[in-house]
Image (tube, rainbow, N blue to C red; front, side, top):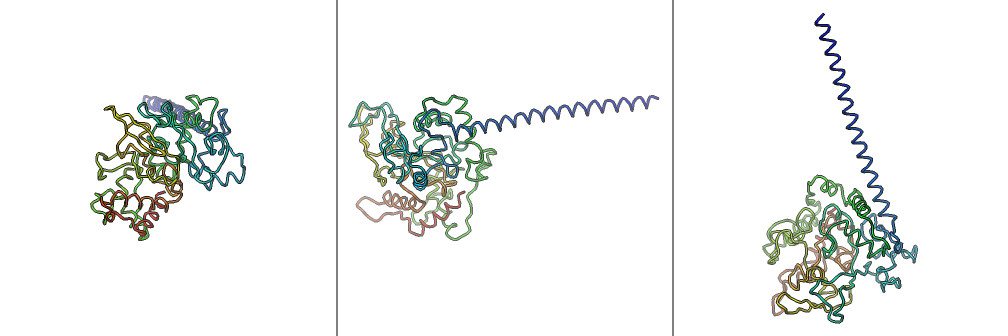
Length: 391
């Protein structure tokens, strides 16, 4: 009899235990399902805000300037939009030639917008000393990979967070009559961290696991030669060229300087650099005389169409300050043209031609001797072939 009672007790206890376990699973599943539904709802709300909300402005949404495919806009995109609708919101406000809605030539030619940048406290304009901002022409930064993987926002690094960037874009570029609430900015940021905003599955995986992408090996001879430029190795000789591009395109995102960069005081992890884009001004943008008041009371004049990072920091010297801009990620680069802060390079071929000019200038000894660093036509073709692999 005791065995029977014991067996019944065991069966009852087991039944109670299984019921409790089933209840626990059900509760946890319910919680997980609720959380998943909440996450989907937040993403959908962010999508609606990104793609449809105008915030009482000039008719633009975030999607107006950040296309689904590339996260930015090219002159070809602008031309297609103009051919379809000459009154497209893209051509309003800072997308127009005069900033007031008149003219489309700049957008069709360069796809740049007019950006009003606050001047650092010690910076002024020689021809307008009372001005506390300046209008410059800049390309639209791509939203591919950046929202989740790059803490430095805007080409001059002036925005401290993605939510701040959202608010600034809506107020400045969409001319919103109301700024997004903190919740709305958060939801847009949530949406910008979803799969469509990554150039590849590897980059999406990196965002969520921290496992960084690796450089593709390359299959053709040109691709393998191109890869050498991006390897983290000491740059020892102009004729070797291995590691040349990696001095500034290193790290998991290929957007920071490495330990081998040969220019003091730059070092691993640098995010800003001048490559003479503003100095050469191939875009032909208007030039200003910026006056920097230095800590010792002296002044430095910087004549430039756009001094970049220096406008934010107020520093009048340094390769990572004056005319310096954020080093962009190269992942997905084949899809995100035009290139450079002013969109002056329309193609990857234009980009490497600029670098050939840049390296020749900085490696030419005093007196006009032959430059020490030459990117040959073959080098340039190899670089383009390899960059197309960086998905």
